[in-house]
Amino acid sequence: MRRRRTLPLWAAVLSLLGGLLLAGTGTSTARPARPAADPPRQQPLRDATAGLFLHWGMFTSPKHYDCAAWEKAVTDSGWTPDYWVDEAKKLDASYIVLATFHSRLGYARPWPSKIPGSCSTRRDFLGELIAAGEAKGVRTILYMTDDPKWHDEQGVETLDSAAYSAHKGRDVDLTTRPGFGEFSYDNFFEVMADQPKLSGFWIDNDNEYWEQHGLYEQIRERRPDLTLSNNNEDTPIMDMVSHEQKTGMTPAYDQPSAIWTPMPRLTESCYKVPSTGAWWYDGQDRPVDTGLNVGRYVANAGTSIKSLMDLQAMVDGRFPPRQQHFTDFMKDYLPPIRESLHGVHGGGYAHGGMQPGAWNDGAYGYVTVSRARPTTQYVHVTTRPATGDRVRLRDNGYRVTAVTDLRTGARLPYDQRDGRLTIRSIEDWDAHDTVFEVETAKDRYGVYPTGSVTADQPRLTDGDFTTYTDNQGTLPVSFTLDLGGRKKAVYLGVNQREWSPTHNRSTFGRPEDSARIKDYTVSASDDGRRWRQVAAGVLESARGIRFIDLGDGLKTRHLKLDVSTTWSAPSAPNFYRRLRIDEIQVGHDHVRRR
Image 1 (cartoon, rainbow, N blue to C red):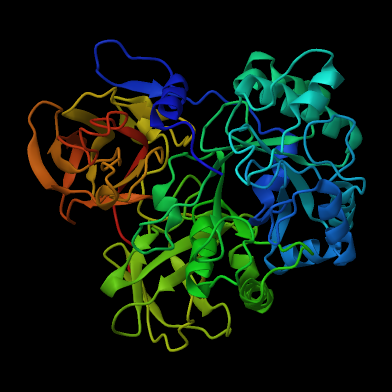
Image 2 (cartoon, rainbow, N blue to C red):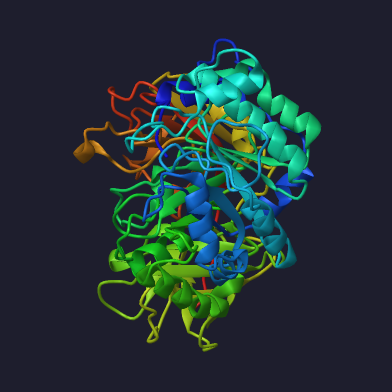
């Protein structure tokens, strides 16, 4: 796994998803280019919380340099697909990505193939895995690489150009990108024909040959049931974008802060469960940081991102002891809180919910919202407060009616004021994720409903998170809201587009990327001509809804948000001075309950 293409490509793709430019305003309103409804094939992925990523092949330790010898070793070891499927279920993973046709693992194809060119087994390990998974509700997705450059990394040639050339009746050099692209292209079609129960392809970047020959379009035509996932690029034809392991965040488990694909795009975070080492088993029992991995799992669920967890399968398919210990831990850890992680939306984004992120006294956490019961939210405290027995977060206008510790069932006291929910008298802190089930009233309180506030940029207040306003690189920029009459206004709730990272990577020699509001002022006017400043400050660079408080005594008809700077640095030209906003809501009152 690697990153071949960088920001300019995917940023350009995102720019192409923009819409109509409003002449003379310096801003635009845009709607992503996507189908009116999500294809049915995507539903299993949208319903998923997690997947299991398995890198496994000839060079899995101990390395084998002969395909037949590797197949014999796998069979003699007692390999069974049921082990992988059962391990996936311990992680509440509903799909397995099998990465054997991998550039660093010998381009192994653990299935019979009539196409010569790399290792292919007589035994249909892939077919057995598909069947075992189908019997237990776990789907199988096949990894496909675009890259021939590691063909002789181990001192032996793993790509047989002569055999493939004889098969094609002309010379084809598999060690070149066009040659390998043709070879892998043929394999796509063979697998589609021979494995009718395969659920999809997970594609590690693109090969020029595939693009030139319309591979993805042909897959859509021949097997419309197959999902397509792409690593590191937001290719519009793909069903899902997978973001490779991100590190360097604070807290370390907050991988979503490094992700740049906005909802409602189907998005996945793929990461290694072991703390060190390659993506595949190298003969060592690598350490596993349980807290880090639980935090990642919760963070992804809290932002509507799928967790694709890489565990290092040995030749017999089993995991090293410390990774096995982790799956056994999760088998018991997840069921008591499963309802808060499965069948939920990330809270604070397009589907509503309270505000995630940094809370009181060093606390940090996420919010999930039940899809089946929208009045049920779950507050996940992944880092407990440094002191005290309470946690406090912005309530986003949700009137709370009950708070329960999800694990113990204990009812907890709480209060609401100044736009914040405080859960008190917490004694049973979990080591990794303290979860509170929060019941709320059906309707939000104190927020002007959609349609009652208009804006000079209509997408700001249309209630549709699939549309957004783009400043087209113009700063300073202003956004004006009309309340329809002189009314009370106590805060703005701003959902910025989640199309850029939020963590500062300067320590890694990378620029600040966040295309989000930094310095701002808010002004009020009764007539739309004479303005008075009512708020000013710096908005934090963070995912999810952000709030700008205006005070309790303000009454006005018009509000103007002026943005003078954004967080992105000049050295990040794809984001510098760029700002996209999904929605701005106006709150006129706070819930008060003691």
